[in-house]
Length: 79
Image (cartoon, rainbow, N blue to C red):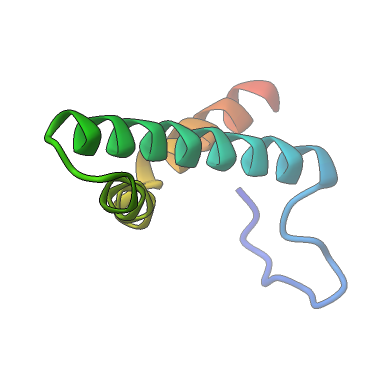
């Protein structure tokens, strides 16, 4: 891990890492939305209510485990 301060012209993430992160976040959001919608529909909510539950599931999604997993992957790939 770098101890130097971030320089304005230096990207925080290289392009490949950024794409992997975006794809992982997208997949996590889709999974949360599908699960939220399904649980709401099973509970008897109307389609609009199920959609609201799906959006709420995405808003509550904790990305900390995903980011930790990606950080471990980055450390393993740099060895």
